[in-house]
Each structure stands twice: as C-alpha cells, then as structure tokens.
Image (cartoon, rainbow, N blue to C red; front, side):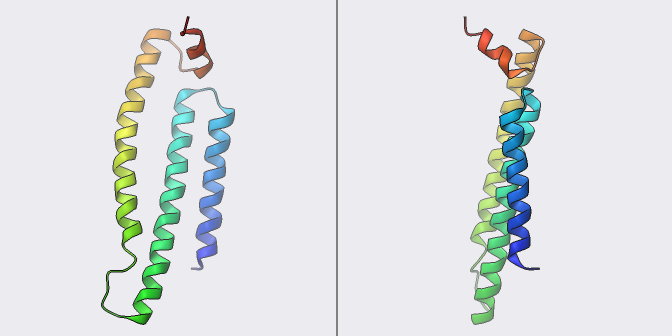
Length: 111
C-alpha cells in the first residue's frame, strides 16, 4: 500500500483529534481526542518505519534498519498508558469534588 494512504489517514485522525480538543468542554472527550492524536502520530511513525525498512532491505538483505520508528512507538504507547492512568485519576477526582467534568468549571475553582 502506498505511503500516501497512511499519511492521509494519519492527517485525518490528527485533525479530528485537534477539532475535539478545541471544540469540546468535556474533560473525557478532550482526553480521548489527545489519545487519538497520539495514535495518529504512532500510525505515521510505523508507516515511515515500514517504508524505510523496505528500502533498506532492497539494498541489503541482512540489516535492522527501519525498526527505530516501531521502537519509538512502543515508548510512546508506554507514556500514553501512564498518561491515561494519571489523567483518569485527575478526572475522577475532579468529578468527586465538583460533580462535573466540564473544563470551564475548572476556571471557577481558582478563586
């Protein structure tokens, strides 16, 4: 499959994520939009890694070139998992204290 398809899909997912972050007020929806943007970047990293590996394999059959992007995606997923645990804990505590997950309500909590 051509790399352009992966780029277009990743761009569409990233734009949907940005639209969700900028237009929604619900903290859970914003959180899911950030995760969607991370997955769009991961998709693009894996696609470029696959393309780079295919080019390097055509030149030399025995190499490990092109796996760096996939290893980086693994670390991004680990950080995203940690983000999910901390983010959901913050959202749960916000709901317990304010009985709402509306991010505009957080501005009123400053005073």
